[in-house]
Length: 351
Ligand SMILES: [Zn+2]
Image (tube, rainbow, N blue to C red):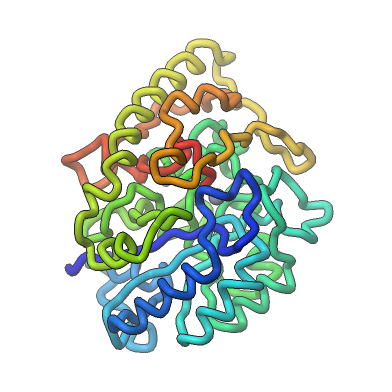
């Protein structure tokens, strides 16, 4: 199967917050990127349609969802208000669809469901529904944006099921696709995702998505504040991917070791059989998802290094012994490709 670029955006704005800056894309740059896709014959497809097409057992994408041009998938994480204000009009200009992964506890009018700590203004339910009505696919992104692999089973299920349940209830449609906060998962997280009703999910990994990989750990490519037109053109063509994301890949390997070590420590310290409490309860506006503000206006500076992980307070490991942060994807290059282990969390970037 031809490799398909799956692009990951967060914020599209000219006024990012310090915490979203590294992963925000200026409005004009986003407009140029979408124009580039249109001019080069790309036709975006929803993430779930692409991911489903990767599964041999399910056959090909339905004709109604099949791209008439070169397939590309455009995704947005977290649900920032600027998706509605800035990105949606540009997408509509080209007739492009996209997939928006929503953290329900972060929404502006989440009310009693509010949870977690959004890094910028977020969408309202009305705006999410409006996006859906305009052909944007809505997916889950957990309820409060925790590090899912660090949660106990009960809290993990709650994070995923509550997110999906709220989206389905408020939007009146099936939600069967999600993106993992911070871009990584573990085998236990992916099993739970499937158990609560998701059948496709994306990670980060910064490599092209080709056939054969786990539909619950489909890799994406990060588009950053510093992604210039030349780099964007190469990324969507699948050229120089390993070089463009060299630093991400190296840090992924390093950070996988950090996470394994941290997990081992927490397992040793955790109460026997402990299903540790969620660090983002429904009522808890915990600060555990604090990250190193994504410093940087340059590709170098927005990569503070694997050591930044130490600044994040670890909520404690869950009871599972199957944290294969590094494994589980298509086999082979386990550390880099593994399990959607690639990601930006370790880069000090918020995902
Ligand atoms: Zn996120």
